[in-house]
Image 1 (cartoon, rainbow, N blue to C red):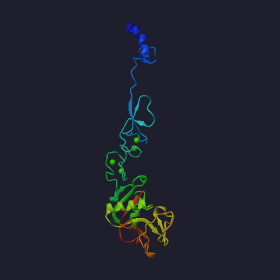
Image 2: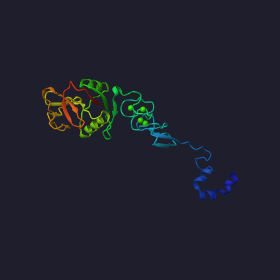
Image 3: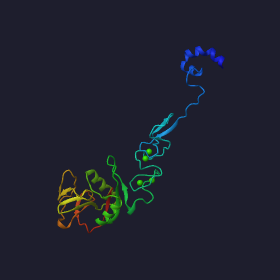
Amino acid sequence: MGRTIGRLAIPCLLAWPTGCAQLLGLDDRSVDAAPTPCLTLYDDTDGDGHGNPYAPLSVCDAPPAGAVIASDDCSPTDPTAYPGASEFCDAIDNDCDTLVDEGGVCLFGCTAARRPPPDYARIYLFCPTPALIDAAVTTCMTFGGSVTAIESANENNFVAATATSRFGAVPIWLGAVENPDTNWHWFSSFTDTFSNGSTCVSPNYCNWAAGEPNGGTAIHCLELTPQSQWSDVRCDVGPKPYVCRI
Ligand SMILES: [Ca+2]
Ligand SMILES: [Ca+2]
Ligand SMILES: [Ca+2]
Ligand SMILES: [Ca+2]
């Protein structure tokens, strides 16, 4: 081999300098060295130890930070969703088994929903069993939320449309109270008045039906009608479905 290489060395070096230098041992890189094996890793931006199957990385040297072998993260930007995670009632497949909110995690018959991005963060639990407002408040507290406030037209429309699709065309509780007379507060931000009588307090959103509120001194609770409008109603009669906002 050495003799053959010797005869061919000069033409080879002229025609193929890098390859011949390696072949003749004139280069640090030996032709006999085994190639370094490369791995396919997967991006793990959310840091839950499970990679994004749609973001493979071919790695031949030290693996970069944030890359893992497993390619089974069904929600690559959510660090709480990965195979083996606990399932919660939140409209997300937390444990990556393709089922959403399975295993009886949604209590009291409530079902979860989320608004489309960019308003995706909040969880809404639609609870179909009619209750008085006090019981609705207690149930929502067990979920770590409160009977929903409404802070924009988009939120109003989402809550009304989803409630109608799940409960039918019936009124539902909203999480507000009038105290004292004419001052309306959301349970979730009780120190703020969002409406003084029918006059919405800027910059809040209100959607009173025509002539509402009209209940006088004995009527201090708030319902959302199937027409997506607000009406004051008695707190102590008329059990209704409700929506908890987490
Ligand atoms: Ca991940
Ligand atoms: Ca994840
Ligand atoms: Ca699941
Ligand atoms: Ca879930």
